[in-house]
Amino acid sequence: MKGGLGARLSPTNTQLLRNQGSLWVSTLTISLANQMAKEVVNPDELVVVGEELDHVRIITLNRPRHLNVISSKVVSLLAKYLEQWERDEQAQLILIKGAGRAFSAGGDLKMFYEGRKSKDSCLEVVYRMYWLCYHIHTYKKTQVALVQGISMGGGASLMVPMKFSVVTEKTVFATPEASIGFHVDCGFSYMLSHLPGHLGEYLALTGARLNGKELVVAGLATHFVPLEKLPELEKRLISLNVGDENSVKATIEEFSLHVQLDEDSILNKKQIIDECFSKDSVADIIKSFEVEASKEGNEWIGPVLKGLKRSSPTGLKITLRSIREGRKQTLAESLKKEFRLTMNILRTTISADVYEGIRALTIDKDNAPKWDPPILDQVDDEKIDLVFRPFTEDLELKVPEQEDCRWDGKYENSAYAK
Image (cartoon, rainbow, N blue to C red; front, side):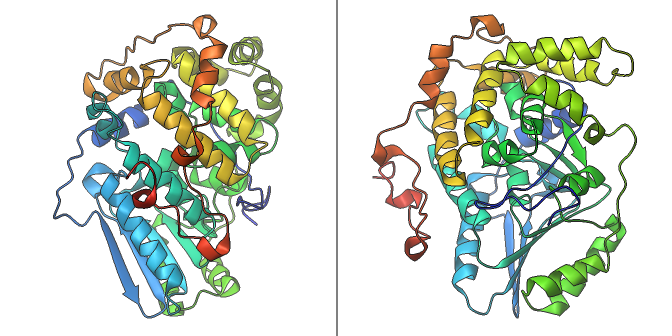
């Protein structure tokens, strides 16, 4: 169980989580995006460090100056280590952490932007990442994420599916992709859609943030440990030297604290969120939210509403539909859908909003995106249908759901590589 509200999210179990309001792209998100935009990968740099200590294996995301953003090299190394260690009978416990003040700020936005004029320049890293996401969710060894700081977007996909995820008072979570013309990906259309009520729609559309306490209460993290105790917890887990879930849990609980929500936490606004974000369309959600914002005591809605209205209309419509579909899909089906959406968005099948969003946020930094189309009413639902349309079977993401071929379906064996 994660927290007090629900069970762990996995392909077969549902996990709970909650969130807190934010602007279109918060000051924090802008800062992160600026860091990500500066990423230049040194071919000789160890962007992921893998360690083997008897029965314990440790993964360290190792680009602290760039908030451990996820590049193609990071994805390849993560996949290499996780497959190797799942097959290794000596490996029992996997720890994953981030160097510096961040766990991972998510994908490298500059990589997408610089590839905008080259056909499918980012296809390989997208394919490999979504394929990896499935294996992280279904991993056969006990995993513990030690999340000391920022965990956003794709970076959070390295935290949420773990058997144990430990957060601190410095942890910040968000999935802000819709605001820049993208969509919630890396399995989050599945994860968010399986939350109670219509919280998933709220998180996906607003890009709102959660702190460490909220993550635990909501069920997105299993334990809250003060940051100053995290190094000692890591040492204890290494000395434990086993992957037995009960033993690992007992060890973590020696360090963890009971958490209590702040009075103004969004977790205390469930009734309003369910009322507004259950509406059929983004336009109706905004109208309902406006009504609630006019009521006494609902001042918190103002910044969230402002953010929604400044977000990409196309990104919002795609994201809402993806979340709603995810509620009826398996993890594998959601990842395949997300792969189609990402490739169609990057190919500007119906709009170039994602590149305009990245430009405004990280390149020119004017925070004045010019969306096309600029308003919700002009986003044609038939065009939205186009980005959801299945690819031919040979071009779909290959997610190996049968145990005997679990690590098949790699990019190098796909039609794209050929």
